[in-house]
Image 1 (cartoon, one colour):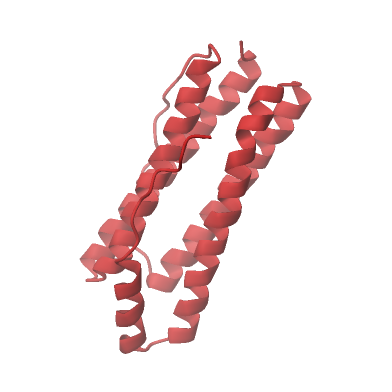
Image 2: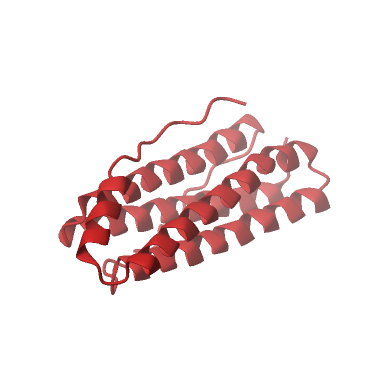
Length: 169
């Protein structure tokens, strides 16, 4: 059985992950609106990943005898200054999620909850990947600057991203 303190913290993280999904779906709509369908695709895949993350927490909490509480998801932003600005905000958001995951790990250690501590290791690795992906796209956007050809090529590259559910551990 999971402690009430850990249960509450995981419920809050489910909300964080659901907000992340909302944010990336909003970014996808923004990119559709400005005609960057590849960028929109990348963000839709990101939305799917975040929903997977939320459901992974959801299922874990239930498997430990916890109660899932679904909180109100705040409304995400809907417009950005530029693709670069959107990805810079994506990176900042992922850094926030990394901080949240690290706080959950700290709480699991404090609670001496070895199962949750072990479960969270997957998220630690995932956050390293999330931040690296954003940093790579930001670097490309900075290199492109105002080049429509460069933006077109990156849009085409991002159109190829697909969601592949991670294999069961």
